[in-house]
Length: 214
Picture 1 (cartoon, rainbow, N blue to C red):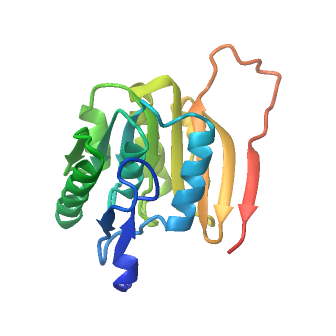
Picture 2 (picture 1 turned 90 degrees about the horizontal axis):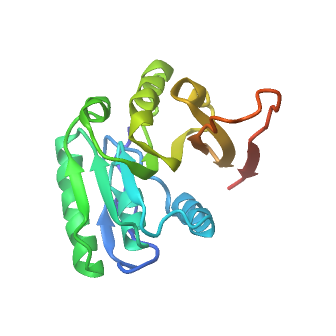
């Protein structure tokens, strides 16, 4: 993965209590969510009233920008999972920056492999971001989702970011239902929620699909 330029190694919290707080981005080894994608994503989440008071989980957190953006915008707390030692240290610095700017202390960083953490975790989450590396294979992605499912609240949202050319996540294997897709150039976001237990098996609802070119 190419080394990022200085401008690409620094981003900012877009809105909320810590608006404008500067975040570091790892120079190598991660694939940060672009500001453009993050702004669109959080606009949609706020429209859905999915952030205020939410318990947030940020998997493959990278810089922590997604979980920390949610914290700035009113989430009750955020857990950020990143196994890379340098990236985890950077997330802790970013979390400290957001806490200082926004007055919240509910950010927890876990330096461990995502799947290992999911198998050991307890608690319930309302909003989950998963931005795995492009080389994570489909079987591992599905295993993550299956391990995540018991940690979700009934009304949880799960948002997976991957390359648009990637195979869509197998949400059904984890008892989740895809309800929205959106692409931004080479990046795609898949939105899912726990499948309704009383859903009519005869109704084949199709997720909304959107595309936004660069």
